[in-house]
Image (cartoon, rainbow, N blue to C red; front, side, top):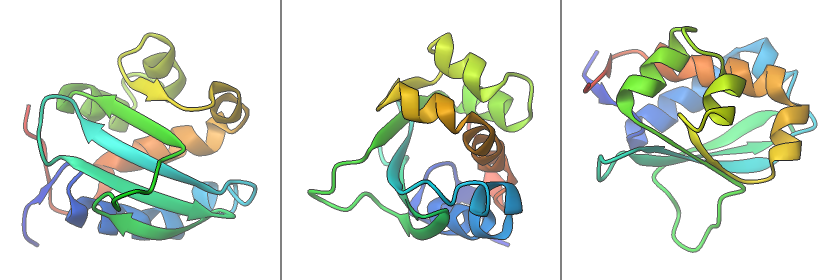
Length: 132
C-alpha cells in the first residue's frame, strides 16, 4: 500500500469507499445530501471534496471548480489525528473551533451521530501518513 497524504485526492477516494462500507454513515445518513470540503490548515494541496447523496458517498477527490461545498471543515493535521483517534469528539472539536466549520450548524448538529462517525473515519484510510 502506498502512502496517502491526509485530505489528498487519493485519501478522498479511499474515504468515499470507507463511508459507503460503514453502516453508521451510509445507512444513518440516508437523509443527507451534501458536499463536504476537507482541508488541512496550512498545508497547500491538502484539500478534497466528498459528495454524499442520500447517505451514499458518490464522489471523493479533488475539489471540483465552481462547485460550492455545503460544509467546509479545516483543522491542523494534529487535530484531525486527535478526532480520528476519538481523543476529542467531533462536536467538541467544532464547538471549540479546533475544527473550523463553515456551513449550516443546525444541519450538522441534527446529524451529529453520522458526522461524528464520519470524522472518526478520517484516520482509517489505508496507507494514511500523518504529517504532524
